[in-house]
Image (cartoon, rainbow, N blue to C red; front, side, top):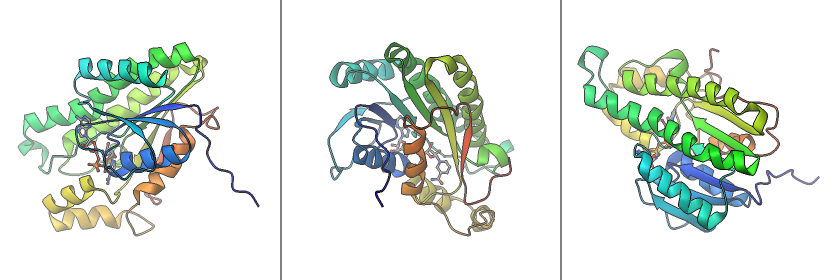
Length: 249
Ligand SMILES: NC(=O)c1ccc[n+]([C@@H]2O[C@H](COP(=O)([O-])OP(=O)(O)OC[C@H]3O[C@@H](n4cnc5c(N)ncnc54)[C@H](O)[C@@H]3O)[C@@H](O)[C@H]2O)c1
């Protein structure tokens, strides 16, 4: 029996946060599906990718930088068909009364305003091309909360609301806008958070996953690849669970 591969040939994809973790797995998966991929990240892109990518050092909090990078993608690759917002930070490990305002503002800026910037800039090109798929990486914590992460959780809940809103704005334009909500995934962000978090909190977080394990980035990339494909044609504004059964709604 022939395997039905996800075909992204002829598509141009931008992956923010594509240098590490879930975004890097998406970059690899998209290259394997024959997409042309641009990676926007503040970090270095690994050199062992299975294909060429257009690398750009972009801070998604900087609207002018996002606009300039978009212009480069359009100029070099011919348009923007797919946008995956995977760039994110999780710096907070304090209860809300101790939460540093600068951490709150930084998490909102990267995780939520960054998604606003890239969607704002990419959608005109998707409208011009008559096609678009946007996948925003939120978090399970946006649904059921996570102690000591007020800024992170609020930013990720905002991403779900923004996803639903943009989806309605472009629903008639062949542009699907959806979100994923990962639980704990084995990435540098998770390992860093775990190292800064009291063991009872991280053990409690892990215990909430019915499959009793954390996710692999390639598992997230598999779902995102389908969501970014033409086959995701009648679903928009939705949130796809990546939680090993932890989802509550
Ligand atoms: N790993 C988890 O357990 C988990 C759980 C839920 C949600 N998420 C979300 O998944 C996404 C990917 O996270 P990950 O776990 O792969 O983390 P990661 O740290 O491995 O990757 C995040 C990437 O985002 C980049 N980045 C950070 N700030 C940026 C900025 N201002 N502009 C551009 N790039 C920036 C980083 O350099 C990094 O390459 C994030 O949005 C994160 O919140 C992760």
